[in-house]
Length: 93
Image 1 (tube, rainbow, N blue to C red):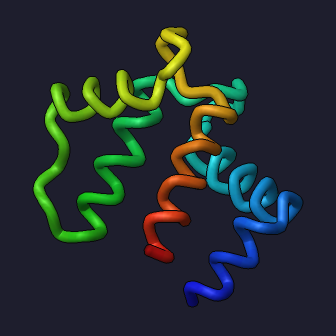
Image 2: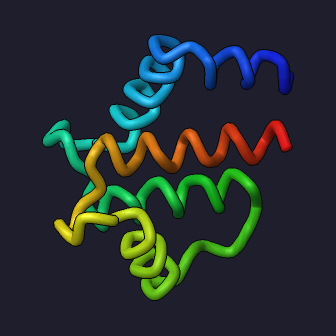
């Protein structure tokens, strides 16, 4: 698994395809950004799938602030892409 992740991280086209597909699945309304409401829906879905407690409004706000590095009150694809890269890098460590 880690060899595949390394391969993806070293292949810009593969990485961008993964980022695009993941971003589009979270960007429910298709406006090319992820709103706090869209972020909440995906966070609730993930925690539900994991059998964990759903996030609080404060949890969602904290994640939004951490990901929204340009202060636009939404998460653009570049910001989301950085998250995906960081997750993939963490998985191989």
